[in-house]
Figure 1 (cartoon, helix red, strand yellow):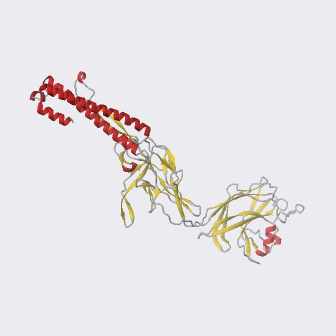
Figure 2 (figure 1 turned 90 degrees about the horizontal axis):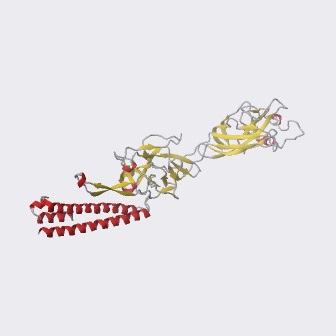
Figure 3 (figure 1 turned 180 degrees about the vertical axis):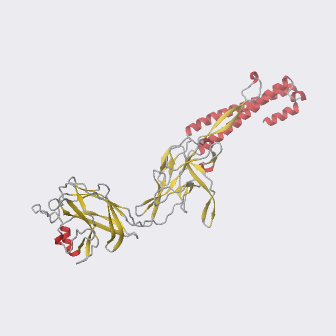
Length: 486
């Protein structure tokens, strides 16, 4: 319209008027300026309508950030008393720093950020020999609907691949400092042989063994003379199958635990305790622990082995001297070699406090080995770490998710799929690898408010309609002015 009007003016007005001379020229120029201003308003409202349309269209898009519209007046150079309101220009107002609602998700690999950070992602650029190739450029996204693809990568709904830092599975520490695309290995988890047994218990002051008789002094003790060989000999005490019943009658159960060999074979270790000395018979309450080495032994074959450690207790029920750890060398149970095992008691893990039942009370019994396990799935823990789970019940931390912050998040460049690129205005990414703000099994919703968008839609529509009335009025006034100079 401005072009057509300008052309009409150029053809019909006298040369003096076309050059802006005289009152009639000023008249035409004023009407033309009003028309141009009205058109700028229509353009600005059209731009606002485009943003409103996009916001409403993406009201259900995961982690979508709406774009609001701002307006700025454009004032022509003029004397102070001749200035007018000027035309208008629209510009985008990103809301990257406004979080959408966080909703729960049934997917263990979905995650949301309850702060202002962004996930660090990369883009697939091709495939070579069946291997996915990546661009190596960091992009940033709030979209956390990640799923594991056929190649073990975590990909969100927009096709971007999650980046993080690998974790050394031996130490549990992060290795490296440059974010890389995370890939999950779905291979079997190798077996881990048991090396340490955490074992803590309370022993009674008077063990109620089968052989115990309150009327008989020292009947609570193990009697070495009842055995073919002395079972209390430190480091080499053993009990044969032939003496097994006697041993069971003079000792109490200390619990049992399943441990694992280097091949992952499960082995059950049974422990029994026998009191070997007391203040009546000697100088202090003393105990020995035994483990079952061969449940199928017969005759003179060894069935129980002494751990080789005297546990001596003071009057207050504490060990004196303290026994924090005991190493069992070359342990073998029912033909399965387990190697050296450590019984870890801690500073005060073994005590002797009075117990009317006369039995041991195990307070801790665990070990650090496990059988081989089949890959089951992937989860995200509260520290923002990628955890693989296995059929043997084990979980292994594989990678640390890296997040990025920006000094000016609203100056990021918007890309397809809710993804952003850094700009000179946004500043460089500030990486964080402590998992702050990451919430597993959750998704962030769009920050679009439908009711607010409809309100803006009504205002935009009315402003546009008013602008068209100005164009129509300006055109009519130009027609009158043209008729006047003919």
